[in-house]
Picture (tube, rainbow, N blue to C red):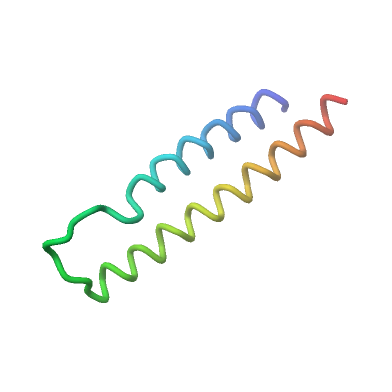
Length: 66
């Protein structure tokens, strides 16, 4: 069980890292469209959910270890 939680925490951390790299790409030549704004909102949502789940998993694993 502990091994599965550890793997889940690592997976969440890797997903959050990849999502944060795609949030606001630097491209000054293009204009902002509604689809860009929607994709940014979805990306930020993924980041916040991933961080929350990572914190939850960390606290859960910490309580199991003690």
